[in-house]
Length: 556
Image 1 (cartoon, helix red, strand yellow):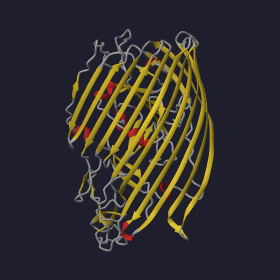
Image 2: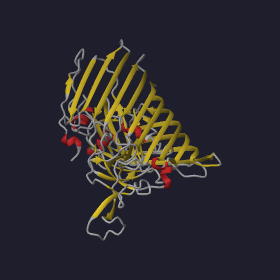
Image 3: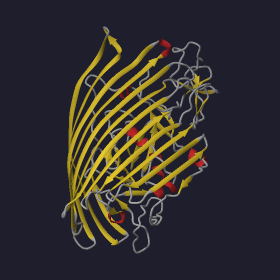
Image 4: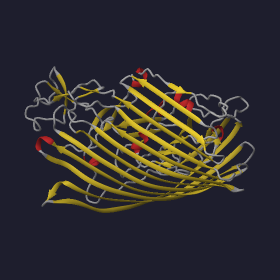
C-alpha cells in the first residue's frame, strides 16, 4: 500500500480574498479543464494548448489528458510521480533523484546521464527542461497539466519521441487574491503553500507563490545513526509579472526556484535485491537453508564479513546503510514571453535561461559496513528561444509557423571510493554541449463544416559535443584525457490527422505522427561509468510498486 493511501491529510485553505469576488468556474471531473464558459450540455469546456494555441480539448485531434488545478487537488496529485493515476499509458518510475517516465511503452532508460535527452519531454510554461531531475520538483500553483501521448515531433521536438508532459502555471488576475494552504500526514510530513496575486494598476499584475515541504522519510534505516530514505526537504517558488500596455501587446516575465535537500531516495536505487546462497557460504543453492546476500560486500573487502556474504533484509521499506545519503539540488530559471496580436496572426516570442546543479552522495555498497561511497555532481546551463506565428483565423484555414533554438552545456562528475582499500576505483569528469535549431509548421483546413484535414512537419538539426577526463587510474601520474568528439543529428518529422466533429463535444479522428530519439555522444576513447557496468536492483518506487531498475555506477 502506498504512503499516500496511509496518509491522513489535514488541509487548511484560506479562502481567496477577491475584490470584487470573481465568479467560480464550474467544477470539472478529474482529468478535465474547468472553465467559466460552459457548452450546451452544461459541462465546463476543457482548454488546452497542445497545438500551441488555446483550443477546446473536444476539438483537438491528439491523444491528450488534461487536468486542471481542481482536478489535481481532488486526485491528490502533487508531483509528476502521481500523474499516472489519471493518465492512460503513462508510468513514472524513479531512480533516486532521477525520473523515468514512460508513455505507451516508450521508456526513458537513461537515468541521470548529462548527455542524454529524456524520450518523454518535460515542459514548464512552454520551456523545455533539459535535465530529467527537474521533473521531480513539486507542483506549485498550476492552472493545468497536459500529457500528450505519442510523438510530438512537429510542434515540439526536443526528443518528444514518446510524448510530452506540460505544466502551465497560473497568471496574475485582475483581482487581489491571497491563498494559504497547510497539510500534515504521517512520517511527520507537512507542506505549507502561500500565494499572493495583485493587480498593479490597470495594465499590470504580479503573482508570487511559494511552497515548503518536509518529511522524515518513509524508508527506515536499521543501522544506528543512519539516515532514512525517501525524505523531503524542498522549497519551491515562482514570481510572475504580467504587463498589458495595449490591447495588442502582452509581456510575461517568470522567475522560478527549486531547492531540494535531505537524502531523497539516495543518489541511485537504495536497496539491493540480493542473490541466493546456502548457509554454508558456497554458491551451490541446493542446500535446505537459503540466504539472500548483498553481492557488493565480500570478505575480500572486509575479512570479518560472513563467508556467505552480508544478509539482505527483504522487507522493501527498510535499508541498512552506514554512509549518509545526501542531495543538494539548486534549480534557478527565468523566462520572458512576448505576445503580439496582428490583424492576421498572433506572434509569440519565448526565451529562457536555466541554471541547474545537483550534488549527491550515497552508500556504494548498500550495507552497514564501510566499503564503498559514491559522489556525483551534475550541472546544466540551458538557453532556449522560440518564435511562433499563428493565424488569427481558425476556419476554414488555420496555420502556425515557428523556429526553435537550444544551447545546453552540461557536466557530470562521478567518484566511487573503495574505503577499505583507501583507493578511488572510479573518478571521471565529463562535459557535454548541445546546440539545436528547428523550424516547424502545421496547417489545418476544413473540407466541410465538420471534416478537417491537418498536416505538419518539422526539421531538427542537433550538434552534440563531448569531452572528458579519467583520474581514477593514473598513468605515470597523469590523468587519462578523452579528446573532444562531436556528432550531428538531423531529421524531418511530420504529422497528419483527419477529424470529424460529430457534435460540439464529440470528435472522431485518425492521426499519424513520427519522431526520433536524439542520439548521444561519448568522449573519444571511453564509455561512461553507467555503460561500463550495469546491475539490476529492486526499486520500491514512490507509488508503492517494486520496479526493476539499473545500477548506474561500476562495481570495482
